[in-house]
Length: 509
Ligand code: HEM
Image 1 (cartoon, rainbow, N blue to C red):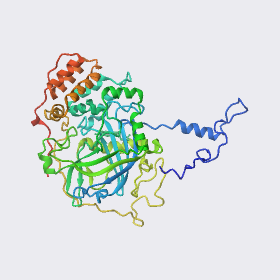
Image 2 (image 1 turned 45 degrees about the vertical axis):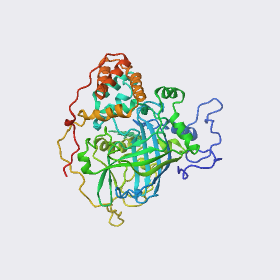
Image 3 (image 1 turned 90 degrees about the horizontal axis):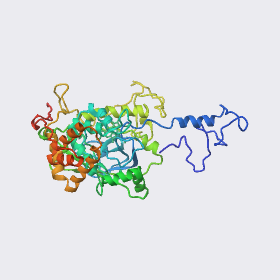
Image 4 (image 1 turned 60 degrees about the horizontal axis):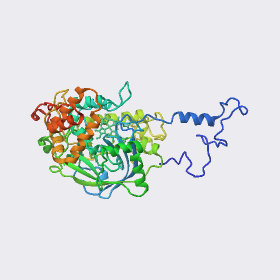
């Protein structure tokens, strides 16, 4: 990354202090005589220690463990009918991309093969600003009400007293919030252990909006499917690797790129019109649901290739700041409440984790020129020079008109405090289809085994029984198999409201 202005790039560079003064004896603190006290005049020593004392920044509150690389995104198919984003304006358009993969719950030293969803965050530097696609490797998520996120995350992390991961709080939360069951089923299948970071797919999960130059919009789901297919580990393999090589994912990504085996993904979009969305069986703003590929086929649009390892992990990956709110004209967030909440949360955490000027850091700085009235703040290391810090009539900034006319998108109407988490039979349809129609018998056996090795650690019989009742609501035989596996009596299925009572997607045009 460019650090040429400050740091020598020569292999045989002269050792200096942070302000460039040469140091003749780097390993010797200045002292009186050979055994006397140290001297405060020894700037080299103080400079060294003071910087060392500040080497760590807060790790990400979630997704702390990760790996990343650079490469490019290339447009392979014309989708100008869907979006007027300038990156899509021509087939063959290419932009630099940085990707960071991650696990979610563990700290920055935790094993790469942990059972956990995986983050797959993509930063594409377009000529109209940065486009961040902050995706996961699962097409659904645990919640559809963002107010649950911090509570949910707490239950998947460490107990406040024991500082241990805790199977009781893990399953207590999930069984009390059964809209999570679709994601939990994917998590406890072998897909919960991708084989390395780069052998997995990425999904927007959320519905986004693509808007074309006439202002016409489509609801979309975005997918990046790994060329050559995704690979998973079994539970015993993942467990062995967690002990033998906790950095298995970082290492296999780095080595693949060093060896020239560049991982690549094909980008696809599923599209839905507003009229189709109103008729669709599921609420398109419900992050626990997928769109059938048969009804809404995948349309290819691009390619993502990672062909460059970072030179410096901290500067180029740890300091990367991805946010769903970093978007460009022609790609808009939908009203999915979890997505809306994320639009706030990421820049907020970046200001805390990296500082207010996090977008000046080379890995985050857009290639599109920036001109605005933001000034100063800690660590302002590039400036807008003498340009006025308000809209001056003498030296005004120009305003670029919107790429499309203001058109009527959705019009919303409703009561405050809708219970977004209200669970109905509809919430069990997709996981049931996954279990009964998509999984093979081996997949089902692995699912039961994977749940068993975790759920048996819960101490509370109430939590165990409630958890089994949720699995039984997917399929009674699945509940019974789990009960037998952990040695408890069968439990009847959780009773929920009929599908007809589910919140439907409805706008008032
Ligand atoms: C990381 C919040 C849901 C994908 C993070 C971070 C926060 C956060 C605070 C740390 C960011 C940083 O320090 O730079 C939330 C909230 C959510 C939510 C409040 C829901 C209300 C989701 C969902 C997805 C997702 C649904 C995927 C569809 C990611 C990824 C990262 C991340 C990939 C890691 C980014 C990186 O590598 O720097 N999230 N998250 N999150 N989140 Fe979320």
